[in-house]
Length: 359
Image (cartoon, rainbow, N blue to C red; front, side):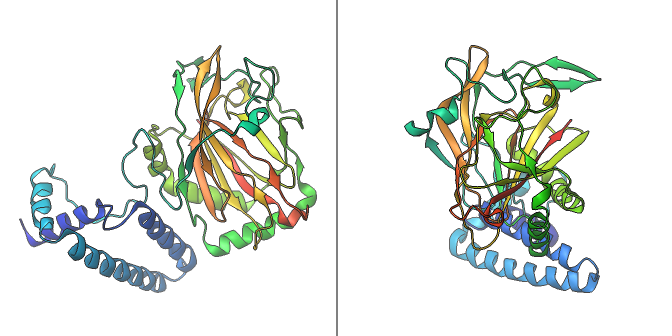
């Protein structure tokens, strides 16, 4: 092996070892690099200097952990890695998405969502209409794939396991500040949230199913968010086990949830008007210090029952932490738990910039 091959193999091995750099740390490094690029894009020299400082700090940390944890075994691992190489040049890389998907998915980029049993006291949240077929804003849950201008019903799996990708510190600080300022300045423009029914192409208001307000016209805030989403989309789809797809359209809105607001269990692509939705994203933000509780996103394990997906009683819980984003397939059954905001002030609401990528 040449010196370069040895160094490349060494870097490759370290980047794949969770004991050296965890998935959460890789996510943090990726976020730091993105923020550095956004803050110094106008000055290439400053940008390079910031990257060099980050690289130096990471290199020292990796080196210290490698000698402390791996010891002499690193040599055997390098040799093993090089013997199975496919001929492509192996280079150091930081994969913030962590390890390949497993039956119980990992969630990089911060505190992992927790799998919990459904609480006995929230049965109305799971089944807003009488059993055995719960009502959903999209009606009967049917996944459709749009191909060549036609809509065809695809085979639905008997079981849908909850899965999502969570990334923390997603926007640069100045981007988060701008989004918060924009939202607080457009309180009067928010509209009552709607839900979709299978018999209507447009949404309807249903206070028993959903309570919140939304802002549709986002201006440059939408461009900033979608630009950042585009930069991580390939890794997100890989982590979710989804194939890449051509993004034909994007929907985005800011949602404000205040005291008593909620959204009962539903999917995001179950009716004709939204059947081409593929990927849901939910970005959390709020005014500091946070003045609300609740408003958790729960993504349920589900199974088919009489033509509709119903909860298995277990779910992933994602807390609405500042500057956090979560991605999940649109067919996932999910809900928003009630928000508690004692002040009832708009500025103290639980805010999200959420939306859907369509194919």
